[in-house]
Image (cartoon, rainbow, N blue to C red; front, top):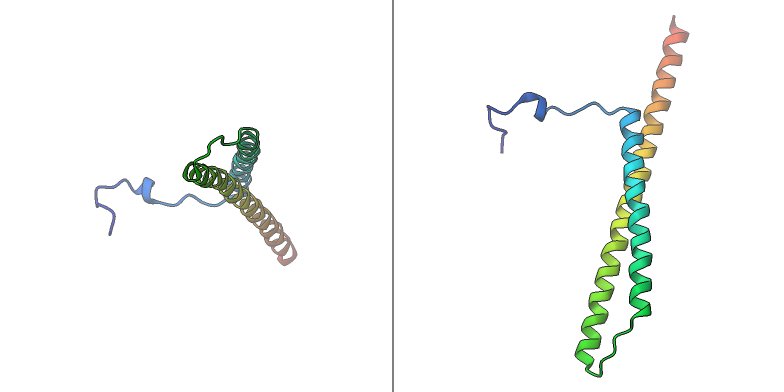
Length: 110
């Protein structure tokens, strides 16, 4: 579906990729990954310290499933943000190296 004609072109235009933007995004994603990892550890230790005290097997199975789901979702978030941080950092390094090589080739041609 095409954007409406009355849309502001500044909002639909992509911003340029710069090393500063990459490293800033990597810092933000890395911070979120660390926070999510710490939350994962906290959730897991809380669940381990508070066992389910019930004789009903349905309650025990359901609580185990919910605990696994909650821990898994938080761990997945930590992993996704960690991989995003590594990717953005690598992209920033690639852009810096590309600029340096372009500058060197321009200096050698002059």
